[in-house]
Length: 106
Image (cartoon, rainbow, N blue to C red; front, top):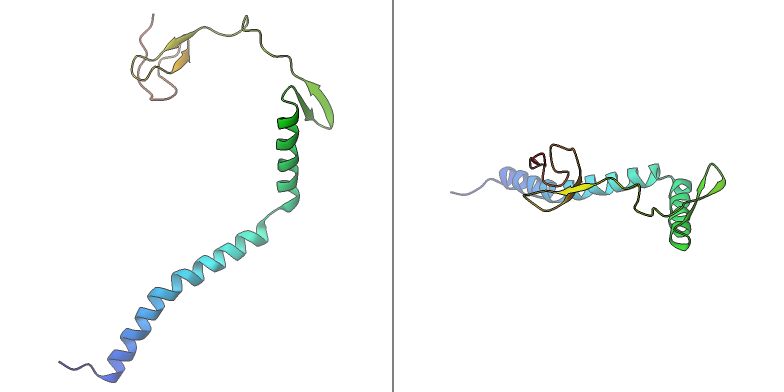
């Protein structure tokens, strides 16, 4: 069964469209996302991360430095281990924060 030239041209065109269209759509999406990028916001986040690495006990809030006192553990809430996965959860919770398994009351 021989294909006519018009049918062959249609099949080749459809094949090229299926191969090329996703690539063109991806590139258009990439350019659109690049144009929406907020470089100032990215730079501020990068600087904040660098500052946090340098000094884990000081951070900047509203332009002023705030010192953080490490927790001595005295004010820390008691915890209970999940029977399913072993994750530590606060006492009094009904479900585990990691696996959502039910935690029995002690």
